[in-house]
Length: 251
Image 1 (cartoon, rainbow, N blue to C red):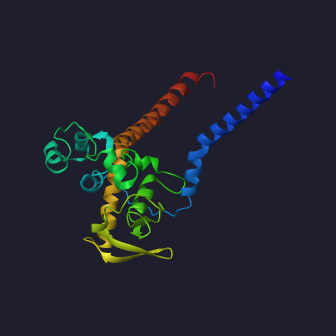
Image 2 (image 1 turned 30 degrees about the vertical axis):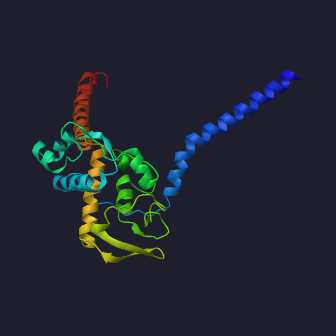
Image 3 (image 1 turned 180 degrees about the horizontal axis):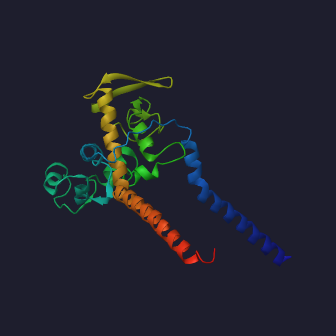
């Protein structure tokens, strides 16, 4: 009887462990499935526009790097988008004086917790992390950064159509202005420094930079992939001709 009871406890613990393991493994899929219900706008492609990427880097440093880090990227990596080290030092470096330093925020964890309740996430890979069945990470970010509206019920005074009850305030409001939510539609009330078209373009530049930052070698990888496919195509032709030459007497 004791052995039977012990075996029953073991089976029960095993079952509980399996359920816990399944919940941990599939929790991200549940989150993605819930995010898939959001209709995302298509983000303009800035991957081959160095001027747009440079503007996106400028916006990122001035408006995002105050709270968020990009701790997988070094400042000198920005030379890949056409900036010189002198331009980077003069215009984009505010928290360090070394060009090889990581792009970290000057805000401490305690300050962030007091201001937002949580530590703002690192944005190095956000463009890849936000990809889902609803669209690419670029689409999510493009829609999100244009989806803020005034909500006096929130601690920050802001809410978002893509990320309901978000803890982040609308840091780009001085550029966009203030929107309100009328039913399911956003309406611009108080205007900002930029027109709607100019703001959408600025956000597209910022998103393009975030996409670049998530994989700086993406364009090199694509070019290399095309080169490999071309080589394999030529090699196949040569190999097939060689095969026919060797086997012509048999066939």
